[in-house]
Length: 386
Image (tube, rainbow, N blue to C red; front, side, top):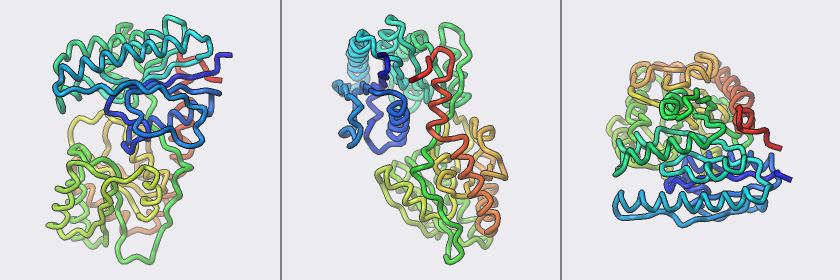
């Protein structure tokens, strides 16, 4: 009976059982595949830890993690890992039991999808970012033409490619050898992980939460400036910074200089994020101006936690949430607008309650990982999972 699924992630920057946001994403999709198949095979170059207890139906195929002291060596190692992943997927598909091969797009990853297509197995390609552009701009890439060629190979071998946002879909469509329109299926959240935060009246200061990896494009300096401005206008706010990254120390220093009280947790396991968000009163996703192509996981998590949220209107977000009803959207990079929105929520208890209830309901109805994977497996070419 063909009731097994294969999940492939060979990106060495994605530790499947690690603590990064991408790790949470992979595990949530894996959990949904487990709910639909009697057996799930995980082919990865970076497990990031042991398979969780109770996941006995997941068969781990751990390949050597690509490494190297220079870009040329690393890229060669990634291409070698792709070959090994392809051989492993070919062997699995040859059993006749595999109903689906699902691959998270990564640089230098095409052989597993090609191996599956040879056997007629449906192939799903999840595209989270324009990785060739991202690698070239923010890291190092010795062979961009080769990376683009691998991306075209992966797209050609995917019977059901999809992207997490419109900008990413446009990027992929421009590379697709078949010239297809790439569907969009945004990221999701598991509402069951989050206990809605209460609307509190007994605090001297309301807590504004930010959760994620502290990178320049997450706008945490903007958030500090906006909280400082809202405080100067009479809102009693403090910051809760959940996570770590290169921008954490500069953000803390900026808050100290601005007189904004805060608590910074540093790196935490994803399992404790819901508990930390439960201690907050509102949340923010303050992206700066510029090009944004991702589908923010943090916004979905804030809404699932019942936190009234201020978010920059980036990428597809304005079409995913209802401004003024489920969140307050502000122009990207606009400190004044962000401060006003934080002040408005922080000084209006009734508004906090309405946003909290509507946001939580939106996460449950439209943003659950179950709904996301249902939409993915309903794409033409994906083949319905059992």
